[in-house]
Image 1 (cartoon, one colour):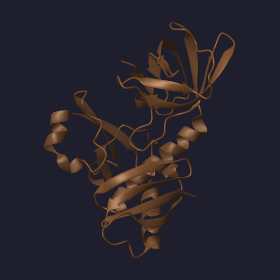
Image 2 (cartoon, helix red, strand yellow):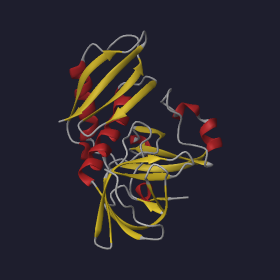
Image 3 (cartoon, one colour):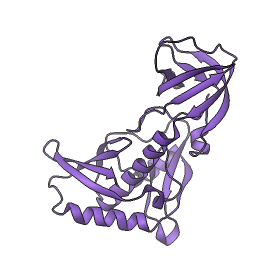
Length: 238
């Protein structure tokens, strides 16, 4: 199994790894990856690999059918051979914006405490779909509540529980359309705040900022009707 360096340290920008394989589509498999693979509404990471004076741009990162992680080159090119040691360099500016938006969406699920039916993360904005028959009356109030939470600058931490513990606590799961990342025997929970000041706790395999003050100011954008009971709420980084 590929070592998931982004889970150990979401702020790691460079790391050495060894090529362990290629996919039929031309992706590169490493023994350890900084690059997050597209999942849970968060896009795959981009950046580049370098080795022996060569450099290869990575456009995105995806999961393989076998559960591995493949780095996808920007264009067809000669790939580093199996066994080659490469330096991974993340497009950090892009990743960090994903981290800010992703963590902000966790907070959005706090200020709108309704079941989540979908979501998507970008570099400038993100959105959550809610099981919400009627649209909120006051977007300005939602924006104010979000920014007030962000100003509290709570720490973001993680906790691992077993699949069985998650099944025994179904209230931890906010998403109706995306199953929590389980199946390996344990599940990662992302916590915002702690103790009496805990703001949120939910299963998540994505990357997040270390403290919510790092998100910066946000605003609520469009709220769209998506079906009889669904509303799509957009959140923008300011």
